[in-house]
Length: 210
Image (cartoon, rainbow, N blue to C red; front, side, top):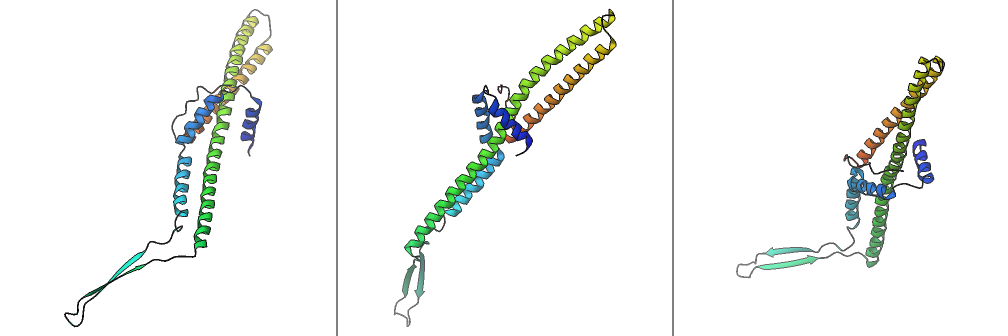
């Protein structure tokens, strides 16, 4: 498990006020639209059908022999032969048990794959919600830094402070702005990943909140 997923899990366990209903709705959309889940289900459903073959005796075979009577007038003869092959009865029972075990394993395979995809989507939703909240906080801090820089600049014009303090405020403002830009880029990346998991259909993440 990589660091990013581990971080998302920690966030999931530590935050108690998620809009869980909203996330569940998004996961239902992903399950319905995800191309990998759809392809996986189709593949294994075909495998299920193959596992059900050979559980019953083969179809009977009918053959017709036509023999012309000799000498003429003796009458023609038709022989109809029906062949039916059987295995030992226990072999059909064993085949049925083996088939059921294979089909059960298929269901487990489908469910495990589905859960992996949905877990990835859920972790992305959690990280998106976290970064959305962080984005609001960063914007507030950036707004405060802008006001502080304006006030500090006005003070230096009146001789109430030094250029050193102005530069410190500028560095603070720049640092917050860089964090805001990085976080905004991460939000776009997460949104893109969620859209891909949703089969390329844009996923509405506006309701995800902490």
